[in-house]
Length: 213
Image 1 (tube, rainbow, N blue to C red):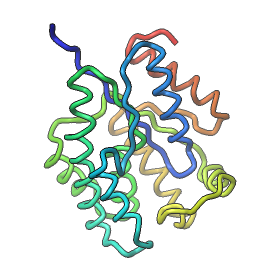
Image 2 (cartoon, one colour):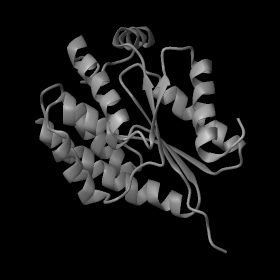
Image 3 (cartoon, helix red, strand yellow):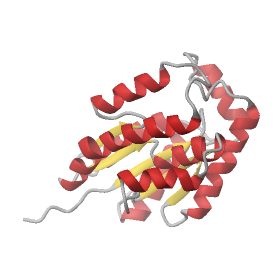
Image 4 (cartoon, rainbow, N blue to C red):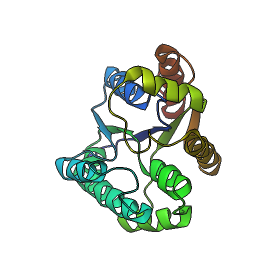
């Protein structure tokens, strides 16, 4: 019996947009529809990729050259793909990831100035002709996202420490990517309460894949 390949859904957005919460809720939504679902994240996933994540984040801001960051992230992504994402899709499971290559395009490619062409060169080396089936971009004003970050507490990472101008650049970068990849990227209003965002995501996913909400 031939196994139907699973679907790969990614959630993207700036700091404080609620990706982690909505990734979990989307995974639960899909499980209620009877799918095997793998919930994962980038940078990270399998133990080998998590080790690279720990190395990458263990150093302070400006420790890594931006292109070096791309190399590290690409190495972790290759591990993520070969050990988690592709095997799951091949057996028919759905994969929901908190961030994927669009984060690298936005953060390192545009935000840190590496350039989209360079990001795509690395990506095409590790995953030629592979893109998510659907990407949900949680968009909201920068001020609101930064306020959420402050309210949730915890230790900031190197990007959360950057100034407002960087985050404005990041938001604009994501919206530019949403236009470029309009066939797979849907912009979700992240400036709502979590339940409203969850409902909007559920409707978008259901419409795309022919499911009932």
